[in-house]
Image 1: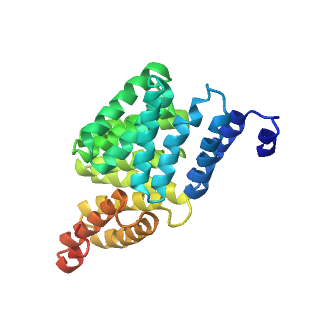
Image 2: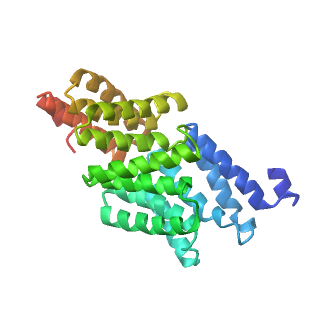
Length: 292
């Protein structure tokens, strides 16, 4: 296909679409580095693409932000997503499904940074755009609702988060099935919300399913699996099952530290959970090692 683009037998946007699909697949399989190379190649093709191939600039750059974040370069990812949103506004394509997707990605990053008001604004704007223009069971709407659930959970609005997580899971099951890559993430929000609401057995069931799906679909030690294990740990801690929690959390924390580095918001979340474990077990010396 590269050869066909070079000698004019194939339009650049056809090859770009194939590269995009390959990048999505490699990320789903756990290889975010190869996914990044594919998405960057797509962006490099943009000057050769026709003007109506908007995905080359917008959607690809937002997805690139996600795979950059996967590799621990969080601030670079946030900036990449912000640039994609700003460029779309400048080009006057801020009322399209593609722009709703960009805002969904950016809103998720803002939530992780703790910029909740900005995150809410971005996600609600995306929600309005997407629901006006595409099917109510679209995966893009499911992803937006999932990010809304995460925002609500981080703000301590657990009942609202639970309802949004359930909505996202329904969309995922209807549209794709339980092996969609964001399905376990929605399960984690559901499980954590249930745990906070005192529904421990339901919470543990959801979180164990999330861990199982991550382990089934991803390479050993992948950070997505570590995030699911860390969420399950939080549920076990609430039940004061300290022995199970400690072994699970130590492994997930090490995997996240290796993949993300010490200053990533996801690593910080796991580190805080380790600290909480040692505080609960009355081991102040170990807890002090994990203070921010």
